[in-house]
Length: 355
Length: 36
Image 1 (cartoon, rainbow over the protein chains, first blue to last red):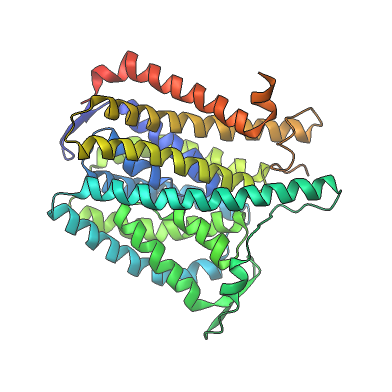
Image 2 (cartoon, rainbow over the protein chains, first blue to last red):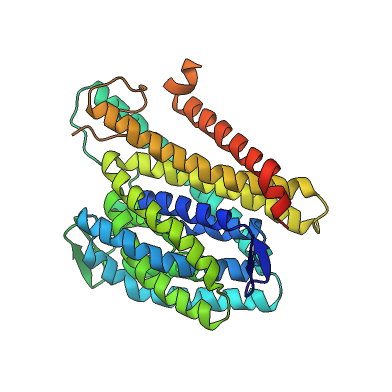
């Protein structure tokens, strides 16, 4: 047990280290800071909403530097795309933090954060599930017919629509192989930054799908470029949250110690899998975090009458972390077996890279 | 048992069951006394 004086609560250190480790692995793998899991998790573990948001973004700012360096080495960052987005992201983060401070003053930060989490993540889960299942099915059909399979496959035509918008200036992103109006990139930056500032997250859980489905980047480039964005938005968000008195540095340090180790493993694991596998993990992590947040929301809305809801929220939040670590580790093991020509379940080959 | 490995949904369900059980055990035997 540790006494977090600034947050005003006592909590086991193990929970914070495990949370950090999990979001490190998952974040490094799907290219998100993992913050969308941390804010509801910290609320579930007893931290006040505004404090959860502040701790989350501060730990992300530190961790994303490590993951960005790793992704840069893997060639997953499009600097033109990332830098074009930064201005919009910063503006969005500022608006988001102001919105959070308004809910803090009204005394409803916990309920507001959990409600927004449930709505946004459930919508994202449904969309990514539909698209990824379609892409997975198409990959399996192509594999059966013996056609060449790349590292990426998408089943949506949405990026083509956005890439055709003729607003000057048009930007050419060489690494991502995209030609698109800079305004589309800036607007995506503002929207994701707004959510990042409000939730106290890096914004990756919405920025990665936005980079894939709106801008048209491959999942691997979206993952790397998003992390670059998180270094900027996370750093700015951490500064603003600290100025607002929303950060307990001891909690941040415990989380970062776990996250540093996890981020290295997660980033390395991306080189074993195809795009749809990363999007599956993102999708699963969204729905599991949503269930935990939903139960905690129910507990708060009923005035803490039903202890079972609090128990279920903690079990789902902890279970989600264990599940995601196991899933990513088993995907890497299956990929290594597939590479070595050993037998693997028949749904694995279309999700992992053999060469 | 084979279905849980050969089918992606089955594998998902199996891992989720293991994870939730582990989380439940951690909560009941250790976390409950130290939280709230």
